[in-house]
Amino acid sequence: MPAGTLPALYGEDFAADPARGYRELRRLGPLTRVEIAPGVEAVLVTDYEAALDVLRDTHTFSKDPRPWPDAVPEDSPVRSVLGYRPAVTFSDGDTHARYRRVIGDSLALLGPHLLQTQVSDVAARLIGRFAGTGRADLVADYALQIPLRVFNLWFGVPEADGERLVARLAALSGSGADAQTGYEELGEVIGALVAERRARPRRDLTSYFLQHPAGLDDAETIRQIGVTFGGGHDFTTNLIANTLQHMIADPRYDGSVYAGAMTAHEAINEVLWRNPPQSTSTGYYVRYDTTFHGVGLRAGQLVLVSYAAANGSSQPGGETDAWGASESAHLAWGAGPHSCPARQPALLIAITAIEELTSRLCDMELAVPAEQLRWRPGPFHRALTSLPVTFTPWAPKAPPPPDER
Ligand code: HEM
View 1 (cartoon, rainbow, N blue to C red):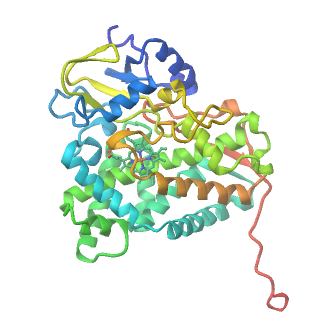
View 2: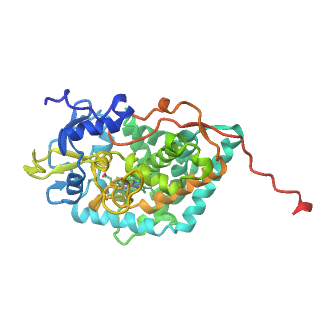
View 3: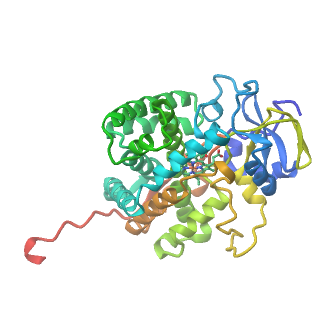
């Protein structure tokens, strides 16, 4: 099939009904050629077993695109995800293990109790901003705000810089034209922060990255923080928003937020299974000409794993719920050496944010018909553009007068 006639993973059509798109792609085989942006071709893996094999087989697949000609044009919207940077996502072997240890060990220093308190405080402040009005856009007013503000606390980003970053990072995740400037701006803010913490360390992630025995230099630290902050923020936003959408809008669970029929944890698990926040992996590159699951691959070919399509193709064993979902089997966190190193803190943010909201505004309803909800086009994410809701206006009770205490 010549490029241009390949199935397109970008655009409004695909975003409107990806499940149908994945069903059609799976009919074409376990791996199939697709277009991920105008003129950019990739091999997409849609089969569960083949997906696991790509993610785990470091002998056949590399994360580093540099040995091969660059097939992504400078101005392509997917460049912000696929363009090489000396960061954990683009590294193999010892280099990857070194970066990954810094990220994992630093995250582990964040105690879950403190994290939960931070997320609850941020959530309460945000809810307080719109609770009295009886309406909100749960993407712009809540899901987008929570991880950003929590990350600002974790990394020690000054709040004014953090506010500026959110607009840029939203553009980045949308695969929009100014995605590259989003990364540049993030780099500038993190650069200043790293210089400051090198001189005066504090108890935050930036200082932990710098103090790690792996001894990253400033440029390496800035890159790893950039990837951790940029990717983590975006997918956590999607996880919160997709789960809230599932709890509020899915007709099968009518009234469940009010009735408490579905816990945040259950809803999250269903979303990770059926609507994963990161729908498609970052790049894997074939190291040598080979045949893989019956399909011929050329050295240097770009291979992407569709976590969403692979989830839909799997036959999980063991305990499953009504959706056929079992927590251990979905690929929403990836798999293999590059799987998400932050699933515990990410889950903690999402569960806490959802519980704080649904326990306060328990009669939330969609402000528009469910079919009018729009999803941001783009091959890598599953992201709502907005989630407008209405609810009974609510105001925190004023503290009782002293004589009634
Ligand atoms: C606290 C929030 C988060 C942080 C700090 C974070 C950080 C990271 C980092 C640093 C990597 C790169 C690992 C490597 O290359 O070795 C990664 C990978 C990944 N993360 Fe997360 N993440 C967060 C939340 C999420 C969420 C909510 C999801 C979706 C459920 C997610 C899904 C993934 C996936 C699928 C990968 C594999 C990436 C790939 O395909 O290349 N992450 N994450």
